[in-house]
Amino acid sequence: MYTNESLYIAHSANGPISLVGKMCNRHGLIAGATGTGKTVTLQVIAETFSQAGVPCFMADMKGDLSGISQVGKTSSFIEKRCREFGIENPEYQACPVRFFDVYGEQGHSLRTTVSAMGPQLLSRLMGLNETQAGVLNIVFRIADDVELLLIDLKDLRSMLDFVGSNASKFTTKYGNISAASVGAIQRSILAIESEGGDKFFGEPAFDVEDLLDTENGRGIMNVLAADRLMLNPKLYSTFLLWLMTELYARLPEVGDLPLPKLIFFFDEAHMLFDGTSKALVDKLEQVIRLIRSKGVGIYFITQSPTDIPENILGQLGNRVQHALRAYTPKDQKAVRTAAQTFRANPEFKTEDAIMELETGEALVSVLDAKGAPTVVERARILFPLSQIGAITEGQRLDIRNAAPARIKAYDSFFDRESAYEVLSATKAEADAEAARVEEEKELARQAKEEEKARREAEREAARQAKEEERERKAQEKESKKSSSFARTIFGTLAAAVATSVARSVGNEVAKKITGSSSSSSSSSKKSTKSTSGKIIESATKSATTTATRTLTKEILKSIFK
Image (cartoon, rainbow, N blue to C red; front, side, top):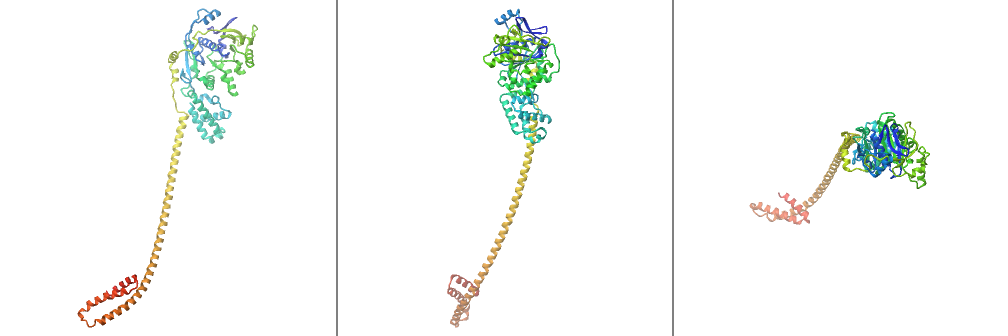
């Protein structure tokens, strides 16, 4: 309950315990074992801030905090508390609420850009080693220098591919860029995408100043649905880290106000420091120390104070410690550590009291108006005036639909030109140019091959022509040899035949002339023709061979023509 710049949150044997408004930006801690009442305490403190006009941000791990949006009602537990606290007729009321969800399922989409997240937080999210983180930092630097926007994970993936493919061009100016490191980062991006983390990166990016809204004088409760997000602890804690550092970067200095501008509840705070590099823890310590001057109070919710590094724990002035169990030496050490963080109360032993607290009961110490911690009190936490427990899907949908237009705008999605589009276009142009050059090379190669084939064909044709000419001349020479030989043989044979024929013809002619000298002259021509034929026939027959006979016959025919 909020009265006179005091936020009434608990009641001890010595009376009400309230947070001092101007000291609420000094941060706080809500600790305790599971089931001891931390969630109800968070709800009580948050709705008290809302009544005072201070907006809050909180992660809802199990859906229980969604009840803060509905009016509470009386129960036997609340009636008992009213009697203990001397409260009559409590005025139950709901808080104005906006639901957000990284995955866009149970609330308005809540996303940021890769550039806004930055290489340091991304390295944590991806679990990169020092060398890989250094390469990622180089990639971001190159993107800035060449004015390429890194909005979503496909932009980062394209930028990594570009830098990796041109590593030799960047090494001298930016440092060594190993292919192994680029490959490891690419694999980490795929792992994030497979877990749905890619939905956290894109536009429109969330404006953290939208967390500072009020409605009818009451602070808006910005509730992040985290039941699914909790399945990816790295993404959950890195997201809240980004949100916290973004608030620090964006909000102006305001000094100490009568009331904070925003209260940031960080549930399951141990996840924030698990696997976080010392450099990042040091940065967190600085942010937590300085962000109070921006009017922001950060309240960590965890099981044990030992989950928080000592340098950060020392900055948490407002503390609510629920029961801890000590069954092992390690648990007992945690109890002693928790007890030592309080200003001792001589009326009881803090270490023993921590193990004796009932559900809804806590050890409480707050900062007074001068900033000094009060003596620890054993107290009962005030009951919430809003509903305890989850709401229905219908109620959640009604609240989403009632949100202002600028909040609903986060549910849309747009993808403007960024590194992916620019590099894809550049690569397409380079590929087209490479294809053109390759085509020209291929055409030149084909032309060269064709020229070579043409010359080879010409040489082959010349060779064949030369060969044919040589064969022709050889044939002519051979023909001349054959003709000369034939003439020689033919002449010799003809002479021999002629001599023989002449002799035979002479004998035959002589016989015929002698035998026919008494014949009349009128029959001389006929007898001459008949006689020549007989002479040729007789001479032919006298030849010894077929060839000779043929030749003889031809010779004699020519004689008697």
